[in-house]
Length: 434
Image: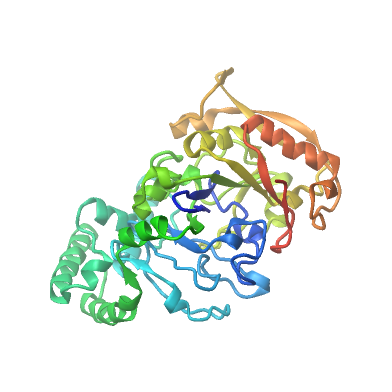
């Protein structure tokens, strides 16, 4: 999750530090109630604008016990341009009590479209990988990768194309579909049926579409306001800096805010990293601190660790500070939000991965090569557990001394202060330290 505060010309980015959801649903404050001025500890609460800068809407939130919904549009009057280079422009009203959502959602005219055949190809590619290599990447099969491939091949279609000359759009769409059918002979797609739907879709979203670059420029240079930029994936899933090839297709580190929203680097202010008190990963890929034992099962069960989009069980393990330091190197975190501390409440002792060894020698870096990462030996520090229910804690003094020591241990090893601690699923279960 990423956040940007724009006060005049300042911006704030918040991003998850590792592979999967950083306790997002677990840690959100209530962004529905009250006015912008109402004080709440989490950035969403004070934001006057929410932006999305990269593809993949793979998580939802459930405010006040209501049904899940995509984040970002929760607060009244929050414009939310989907301004990435492969954003899915699929709109659905939900039963979560969002009033006038169509008036509050703003879509960048430069957003790339994800089509049905992109989704189909995503699934076919996974089947091919499994057959040819004996393993797949573990994508969500929502078409994000193929859509980014279309973009990189300069064959992608954007919102501005959809809303311009529809005959020209139709010709390009047919050509793009034929290209995919030639590469995947078993691909079945109803081209004319999709075009009919897209024509209606174009009229539905037309009132919501704006020039994203000008919109952001005006937001940053107009009356002072606070803007929250929310990303979709963790740092270790970044296409350039993640555990390639087991990554997503976009830049979900802090640089993606500039390339996704079209804003200059100087407009990025404070950067908040959101990280669970333990480590999780969905799908395949190296995971040095994974616990394939009763500890992993306990973390998975107590943390309700299931992939939001795929429903897959998340792999769980101890907190890996090598990964967190690496994410900090790339993103430059101003502060951390440490979520799901309460999941560790029942443990007698808590381990933390502090360094890696390769062939018996300690290495000072996070390996780029996945085969090497699979071979590293993790060095752990063992800390005493607190064996106390922390879900009722609302201030630092309420936490057991052992839990406080755990948090300080993380701060000291990463070199970044923890600003928020999540101790429960409700939005009130958040301790702000400064």
